[in-house]
Amino acid sequence: MSQQPPDRSTASPRSRPDASMSLLTNVTEHSLDDGYAEAAARRSAEGTQGRPKPLRAKLGFAAGLVLAAAVVTVGAAETRISAPAIAKERQELIDRIDTATSEADRLQKSVDTLRDQVQDRQREALEQHGGEKGETVALLAGATAVHGPGVKLVVNDARDAEQGGEGPREGGGFSDTGRVRDRDMQRVVNGLWEAGAEAIAINGQRLTALSAIRAAGDAILVDNRPLVPPYTVLAVGDGQRLATDFQNSADGQYLQVLKESYGVRTSISAQDDVRLPAAPSLIVRNAKPVSGSADKNAADTGKGTS
Image (cartoon, rainbow, N blue to C red; front, side, top):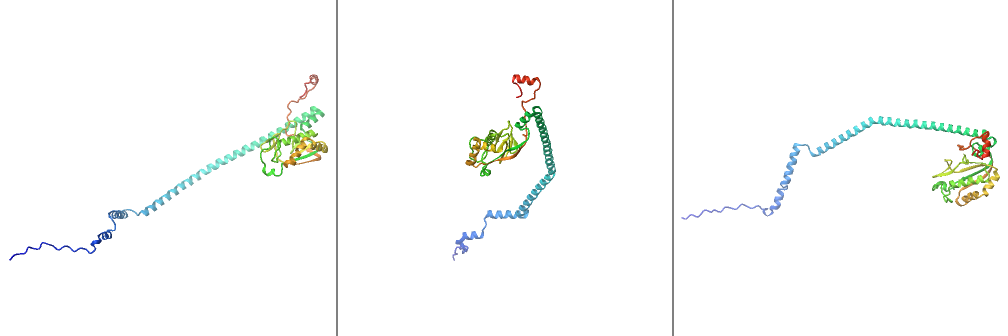
């Protein structure tokens, strides 16, 4: 009886129903790849060995605040330490300034006193050595205060020039700014002298043969002393005649043109009595007394006082 060869075939394994969906199955079962798994493992190890990262950040921020507070505290302490020294130096500087100012004021008073004494002696010398002529010379030179009939002439800037104040006061020709200039006052004073004034003062500043009317920027100076408008000119003389002669002169007409064309304000009136102070400074440059034969020699040679 023949034997049949044994059946060497084995039964094939049963296939999975979702075999055709192997890609989706792999994604589902292995949602994290190896890189993600490694990173997660490393974070887990760090979490067990060290502090959490947010806690470390908080500790660093706190350390920064402590350091900033320490710096501010040290700075404040240094400021408190140096403050007394700075205050002391400041006070010393203030004291030095006050001392220097007081000394300057004292010296200025001394200068003013000495100047007054010199002026008084110059006036006395003129009166003693000149007699009646000396008094006349002192009067004309402005060495003595005077009073008598005269005129009062007030010259002022135009009304719209009080607010604008454009430009300096020096310059030639007519000014269209409505401001009184130094040359305007020069013509006014010369016109009064020509009309017969015996003595003149501007804003209480006595004029002499050596007086100068100039401008420095925005101010009019009389003998280097600044004046401000309105300019009050007092002149001693025959009041009514002096006023009339001045108004009829070329300088009076010049002032009238300034009034009509540029708004410069002017007024003139005769006065029964005006008072003028002595000049603040008097310089005798060449005059000196002569006597005896010197007078005769001077008369013979024509070389007397100058």
